[in-house]
Image (cartoon, rainbow, N blue to C red; front, top):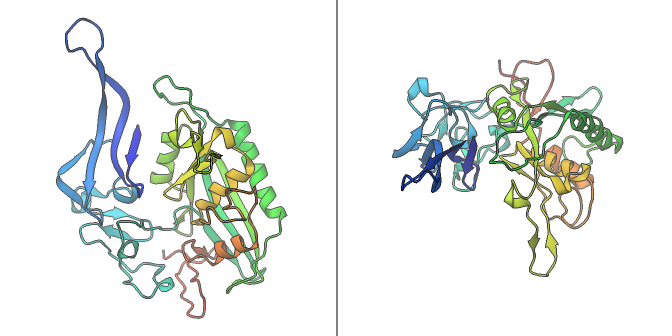
Length: 343
């Protein structure tokens, strides 16, 4: 199944990989092929379905913002579970106070996407979490990545895949490199804290199965889902990876893309450790693309620098939690609130 989305990553159409043949003149020769549409929908800005412009089979359960619909409660597409809160797209509001509300007191505690759904999506910390250890002054960034390893039908086109050896390399190389840099926060409330990385890469089956794990059964820490997907393609199976000629005559090749802060696709041609870390940082709500230096640079092969680490840790988007606690704790003197599971 293939998902066709808009500029925000909202899936508008899903198409099966089954092809229907058409023989208009009954001469036994196929004249054309038609796709099998599994679902199609248009949304109002805050995610409510437009009447008369919606079709969905029972096999596709997901809706606006990539979240699973809870159709049994209020009807098709009228309620979605965001993990930390329930959302009603007809109201454009969450039904309980946003746990991250203290980080932005200028807007309603129930609002969706800063009341700007045309160009923003609502990030819910579903990609990673920072585990706070105050005793040892350590911040550990934890996330899980389901790696696509199995081939799926793609019209006879060879789609590159990872294997068990690739997963072992991912598990041994990414954390090892980042933790060898001995990163430390130098600005903000957590200045002086050490930063550690704990990324786990698991076999996700094919890309569809990996996505299903993220959407339907994510790994959790203190109530925060932390799952992502990780796959690779080439310029044949992903047109974004075709070389581009820039205005100055140079050639640019995109090393990878990350959709909705959790779906990583690497370019087979540029699938190296540096580019992998660049995309992984995107799943942590980090974006300094086209910066002259650091992990966001397009012109130099820099790894994360001090400014990158300060921005990553002081971000209001990546949740911070203490292990083993079961209440939300608000601390007015913190720039960035710390959350634990609300039970």
